[in-house]
Structures are given as structure tokens and as C-alpha cells.
Length: 370
Image 1 (tube, rainbow, N blue to C red):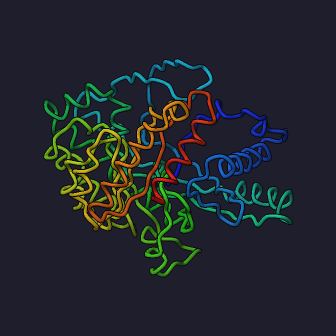
Image 2 (tube, rainbow, N blue to C red; image 1 turned 30 degrees about the horizontal axis):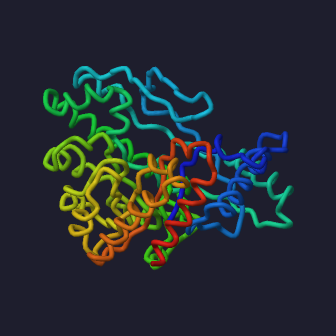
């Protein structure tokens, strides 16, 4: 059971999260440590904490040729979660030519500087390690998330019917860009073979360790691959397969294990998702039927079960609501012999009440142990 993507602006109830450092790098390090300790103190779940302080390699990219143009609207000025309205920049198949491969560069000098500075500050009490990029959401195959942000949702969905040639061209081009990006990450040794998480989900796996790892040249086969098509929540399995799965197969084939899905319901699409090579974990959202999903998955894959984060603000006043939901997830997986993880994420608000997270964590632990 894991909890991630938190509304930190709501949680500093005792001042523990208030930063004291002034130096920007040290403030980042302090923030990382404080949040790690805070989570472990109040709602640890099954969080993994590596026995070292990670300093991420400094990576630069030139982009893919287009920038998102959008309007945003916030209901809580302190919350980074906002509504987005995107401008359509793709009107014909010729516009696909705007897209280009991004150029990845590794800033070794900046990376070594940050690593050395953190080592000097805390290295005598905590080991420090220079780490690469975990293949999670940021380095995931997500062409339709990108297309939604450069076309807008309505135009994307209409395009799947009215402009199929252009939509296939977009998906194909973005897949080629992803494949080339992964190639560059491998050549520059920017992949992390010791990541604890893959987009909030656990990345711990003995199977990955069975393959030889050259830590001076980490390959995709040594790490998790990540695929998703959130905007396809409203399309049929046939359309999902035609416009997404065939491209996901190409993009994710090199990876050692694959985690597929995000917020899109996949309970009626398990058979097409199974076609992805090295698939290990499937996301099942609050908008999916957990019983249908577990029956289809059986014992062959892991279900990453996502409880509804909208219920979290009511955990303290209505714990039975939380218990009923989590028990339903666990029972469905147990009935079908399906390995599962419970992953509470996308938390826009905890109702400005830390106790809601504490209660939710306790109930989830009890139900898992039960």
C-alpha cells in the first residue's frame, strides 16, 4: 500500500515542513528529507526508503518542436492542481512535421557539483548517490497525453473519427520520438536501475535483478517501462487497440518490465493490454470495475488498484466509507488470486486535515493485513 502525489501545502500542521536552509540546493535537499520523514511518521504505508540520499543527474532537453499553449484556472491559489484549457495546434497531417526528436544532454559538470556539495554537507552521516532517471511518468510512453495538450481533448476525440490518418501520424511520430529518447538515455547512461518507484507505484522486483546490470551502461531491459493513454477512457477497446496498443508494443518492448495505465479505466480492455511485451502491472482506477478487472487479470499480472482520492477528505468523519472501498478492492483480488497493490494518488486535497491521511493509512493497513 502506497500514498503519493500529496497536497503538501495542506500538511504543514506542526511546522515540521518549514524549510530553514537558504541555499537553493540545500533547500531542495532539506525539502526531500523533511517530506520523507514526515510521510514515514504519519502515513508510511509500505513506502521504500533507500539507504542513501539520491542526487539526480542534471539532464537537459531541447523539446519536441511544439510548446503547450493553454489557459489555466485555479480554485485554490495554494494548490498546484489547476484546470487546463489547451489550444489546438494540429489541424492537418502536414502539422505533424512540426514534431522533431528531442536532443538529450547530460550536464556532468553540474551533476558532479551538486553531488559533491551534498556529500560535503551530509556525506559523513548519510551515503550520497548520483542517480539517473526512473522510467515513470516523465519518461513514459504517453503520446495521447501529449496530443491532448497540443490539440485539446475535444479535437483529439473528434480526430479519432474524422482525421484518422493525422491521428495515426501523430501517434507514430511521438512513438518514434520516445524510442529515440530512450536510445539517448541509454547511450548517456541516464537510466536508473535502482529506482524504488515507477510513477508512484513500487518498482521493487527481483526479476529485474536476474538480468545482468552494467551500472556504467544501464539498459532498458534493466528498468521498468511505463505506458498510458488517459484520454482513451472514453474510447472502445477496438479504438484503444488501433490507436494506442500497437504503438505501445513498439515503444515498450525493450524494457525489462512494464507498468501500463493511469487514470483510464482498463477493466474491459485487459485482453488488448496483455499484448504489450513484458507486461507486469496494470492500473485499475476508481472508475473501473475491480471485480471484472481481477477476473480478467487472474494471477498473471499485478493490479495497481487506485482507491478514489475524492473520498480521502471524509476519512476521519466517515471511516466506513474508506474501509468499504479498500475491502472491496482487496476481496476482488483475493477471490481471483490476483496480486495487487493499493495506491492512493492524485490527491488534490486532504481537506486541509492531516488526520484524514493518518486514518486512511491505518484502515488500508488493517484491510491488507486482514
